[in-house]
Length: 200
Image 1 (cartoon, rainbow, N blue to C red):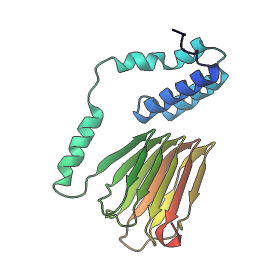
Image 2 (tube, one colour; image 1 turned 120 degrees about the vertical axis):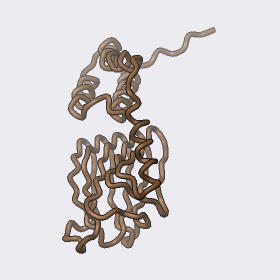
Image 3 (cartoon, rainbow, N blue to C red; image 1 turned 180 degrees about the vertical axis):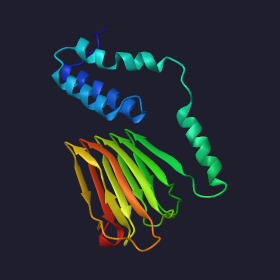
C-alpha cells in the first residue's frame, strides 16, 4: 500500500488559516489576534511554525468551558415567547446559509460567515424599533444582506483585503423607524448591502 501524499506547505498554510478562522468564529480569538496569526501563517517557512499557530487553541478546546453559546440560545428562545429576542446569532462555516421570508430580527444579530455563501433577507422581516445592530464577521465569504426600501443603514464595517458595498442611502430615517447599524470585519470577503427594489 502506498503512503498518502504529504501535504504541501501551501496546503498546510491554508489548513491553518481555516482553523484560525473557525476559532475566530467561535470567539476564541480577537480580531487583532486573528490578523496577527494569519500574518504569521503567511510568513511561516515550515510545518512546525504553522502547527504552533493553533497548538494553544487545540489545547484550550480540550478544557471544559461554560456553554456560553447554549446559554445565549436559551435566552433567545425564552424571549421569543414574549416578543422579539434581543440577541441571536447566525453561524455559517463552509456552507450555504439563507434567512429569508417573514422572520423576527432581534435587536442585535451576530452574523458569522466563514468560507460560506450567506444571504440574509430583511425585506420581508419584522424589524424592531430603534437601532438594530448587525455585527458581521465575514472571512473568505460572499455575504449579501437584502434591505427593504427606505431603511436607513449606518455602515461602520472594516475591511481587510475585502469589498464592502452599501446600496442603501445613509439618510435620516422616518421618525420611530428602525435603523440598521452595521459593524464588524470583512476579511478576504465580499459583503453587499442591496436594496430590494433596486434589482436585488
